[in-house]
Structure formats: structure tokens, C-alpha cells
Image (cartoon, rainbow, N blue to C red; front, side, top):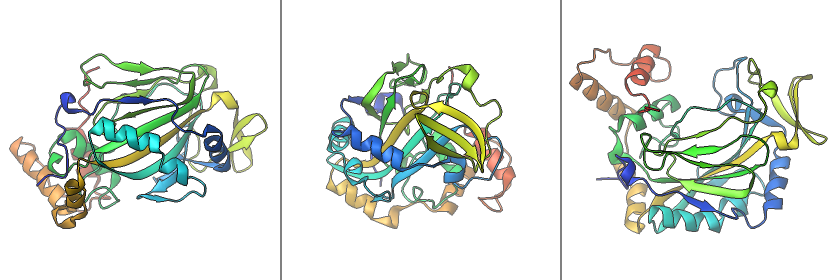
Length: 315
């Protein structure tokens, strides 16, 4: 019994849709961006191990688990433009907004093509360690439990670089690119299964050469933004140098029956079942392994799974 649309090839991807304007009141959205300062690093937000080599990437959540957690973001979360585009893109009757977050990026080199972390029945709300989700998606072993998710990315950025490159026909086909200036525009797509990346941003002389401490913060400053670690100034940026993006995600169900099936947790994956599926595939492929001792901390198991189920990249 499946959770939704099985996505095993690029030909089955939902076609991306550009949304202009993304928000009917962009001024309110920018007010919310300013209200969110100071911003924590992505490492701190996701409670990853502290380090001194965190990229200049800052994040704040507006909604989690279908609930608004940032005061004033209600209208943005239930944006009818996104909901209508998701219905068209995924040929779905039922759209359930799930998460919304802001991302603020300082000038940086380009990122590699990647997929967003996928969602599976029983493995979409921290039921398993986050590191497992990417190889679960790349493996294509768990498509029976896959949950179709629409992702709308909106930008406010008009400086150099910062392209959004994506591969709607598959990573071996030609890419498509959306370029600045971005003024309240969005691309809604199937980012859990469509490869995409962010191009280089800004001038190379403004890149952070060695990253930052993960507990550094991005503060608003007169005319722009500043990275500070405690009271030490790490970097100053003009407003236009910061690439602002807003990511919205929603579950998409073809009809009420599919939505009701998702609500029936009796068909959910369990952590032990996920391990069993991986073990069966490893055994079938003749790969030697030991059963994991702990999914959070068994580094040998983590390295094994991430090594044998990598992104299917050829570019």
C-alpha cells in the first residue's frame, strides 16, 4: 500500500512552476525577515555538533510540523499562491502546508547539485536520525512509503551571482537556471527528487575563507548585516549582498483517500524496518556489513550507508 506518487525517474517528476508574485504583500515578508534577527547559523539551528568551520548560512523557522511558530507568519504560511501552484504542479486536491523557513546567505562559492531531504511515512518528523534520510532517498528502496512534497523557494536578492540551477528532466539532461534580480518570485518544484543547487554569490574577496564558529550570529546593522561571535565582528555586509530566500514545503495528496491513508499510521516505517531494508539490499549486492549498534552514533554503519547510497550525479 503506497503513500503517494512513486518517483523512480525524472520523467515522473512534477514539473516546476514559476510564481510571480510569490507574496501579495512582499513588504510584510521583508518586515518578518528583519524581525527574525539575529539569526543563528544552520548548524546551531539544527543542533548539529558545534564546530568552527560553519558556512555563512543562517536560518530561522516560521512553521514546523504544520504549525506556525513565528508570530506574524500565518498569512505567509497559508499563501494561496503556493497552495494553488502545488495543486497544479502535483495534480493534487489536498495540500497540507508543513514547514516554512528563511535562509540568509553571505557571499560564497557555489554548492553542488543535491536533493532536499525526502519525507517517508514514519520517517518525516525526527523518527530516525536526519543523516539516514538522504541515503534513503538516493537508494530508491523506500519509494513505497514516499510522501509527495512541494517546495516553493522565494528570493529577495539583486546582487551578483546567486543563480538557482535545477534539473527538471534529470541530472543527465540540460539544466534550467533562474537568475537575479529576484523580486518576490518563486519556483515551486519537486526538490526531494529534482536535483538543484545555488550558484556562487557575490565577490570572492567577500567569501569567508575558513567558515565561522557555529554559535556566531547574523545581526542587523545600519544599512546591512553583520556576523558577530560574542562581541567580535566577523564580517559586515551591505543589505544587497545578503541572499534572502524563503522555503515553503507542503504535503501533496491526489485526493482525500490518499490523505486519509497518510493519516493511518499502521503503514508507517519503523527504524528497525529501515535497517532491515538496507541490510537486505547490502546482502543482495554482496557487501559485507555488521548490524548497527546505534543509529545515532555507530559511525561505521553511518559511513557504510552514506558510502553505498550516494547521490546519482554524473555532472
